Image 1 (spheres, rainbow, N blue to C red):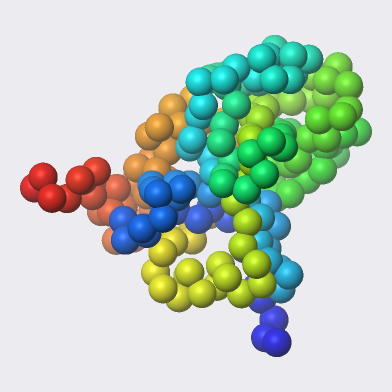
Image 2: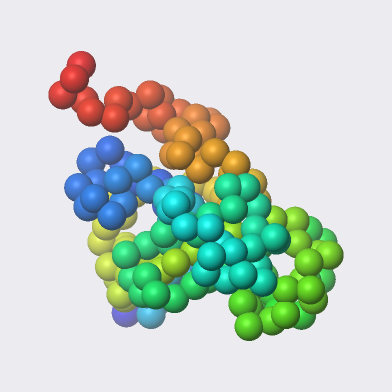
Length: 186
């Protein structure tokens, strides 16, 4: 087995060619990527469900929009919390994933994290890939891999995140941001 270079903390941005409707124009933050597979959350799929409706004690700490996001097609009945916490040390109940981005243990009393949180997003479900599956999709050209920024997790306009992430690239990827929603209408 060849060694897999970790993409943890990077973004997968769906190419216009990706045919899976679960990932149409998706921006996925990879939370874990190794030889055993990959796990991430879709950052730009807000639902109409408020965080306080599902996890009442976390509702006031959720960033705008204060809704639950569909993190992916797997385990939609489970919740993941992501928070941006600047600095070297994070509080109890938070585990760094990459840079200032980390996972929140939603079993932790929110008041232990409240003062440290820069932003909080709650995701129902996640996106997952088995060993070698993501690498195959990358070879097929289904995803662009780009660097994440802490603001991606807490974008107040998640519906425009796909274009915004592509637009900030210093390569031909910036042009892909202008790709029409429905090319047949051109």
